[in-house]
Image (cartoon, rainbow over all chains, first blue to last red; front, side, top):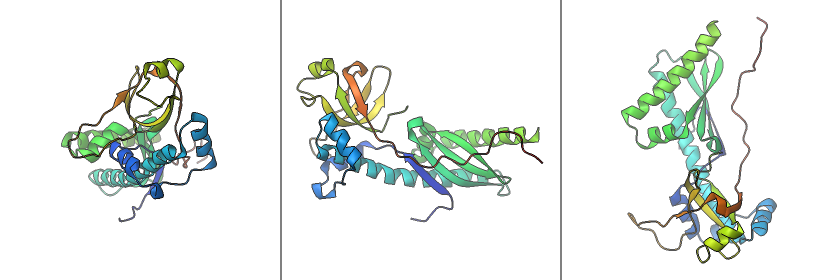
Length: 155
Length: 91
C-alpha cells in the first residue's frame, strides 16, 4: 500500500463482527502473547487467557483496518479540498478517536493546522457508501470548519 | 464514551448471572464484541460457535445495563492531534 503523505494516528479503534469471528476461529499459534496487565485482567475477571487473547487478536485485525480507513479518509478529504481551489489546504494528519465516536483530520491552511472533527457515522457513510449525499455532507463540514477558522483569524 | 465496536470483558451482577443462567458462563465473566448500545444496554456478539457463510444469521445478545457489574476494555495512548496554542501572540 502507498504510504500517505500525512500522519495516521489510531489511538483507539473498533473491531468489526467479521474480525471478531475470524479471531475466534484462529489457531492457538496465531494468538498474541498477553501483557502482564492483560493477564491480570483475565485472572481478575475469571476468564481464560486464551479467551482474552482472541479478543486482543480481533483488536489487532481492527487496528489494521482502521489504519487503512484513516488513510482512505485522509485521501478523500484531500480530494474534496482540491475542489476548493489552488491547493491552499493540505491534510497533515488523521487521528482515530473511536471512544469519542469521531475522526480528527488535521488540515494545514495558510501555515496553520486546523483540526476538523468528523463524526464516525459520516466517515463510515463516505467510505462505505460513497453516495453524493454523504460526500456533500463531508464537503459542507470541511467548508464550515475552514471558513469559521478564517473568519476568526480575520478579526 | 462510545463503546460500539469495542471488545469488552463483561462481569455480570448476581442478578444478571441468575437471569442469564445457562446463557453465559457460570462465573458471569465473558468477552464480547459490542455491536451497538442504547440507554437500556448493549447488543453483543459472544464467542463464535459455528461456521460462517454468506447470508448466515448471526446470533447476537442484548444485555441490560443493570445486569452488568463491571466492564473492562482497552485503550491505547497515541499522541493527540496537533493544536494551536490558545491566547494572545505578540506580532
